[in-house]
Length: 113
Image 1 (cartoon, helix red, strand yellow):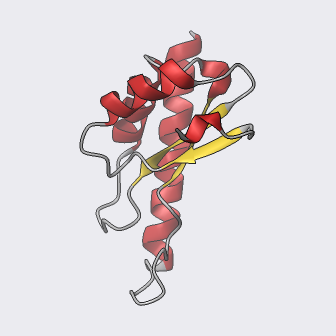
Image 2: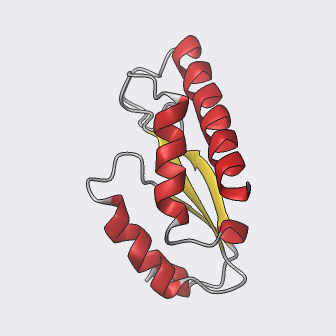
């Protein structure tokens, strides 16, 4: 299992997962107190730009399983994950990043209020 590695931070591809709650449950059962999990909330392969609301909901789902002090957000793999494909255009990439930032902020506000 990945979480048995002697590492503090883990970046997990989740935005494109078919059943992320199953994965979150496994993470929660194996997470050590010193570890942080950065879950991806942006699918970089899909050109559709996620809404801040969609990102917020993904974070809220993860927060049911992962303690807030150990939870962070990121993107799936980067915006040009394969050397043989066309990179995501700059406008789309920045829009997706903005949605991640705003959606994470919305989730944080809801979770800490």
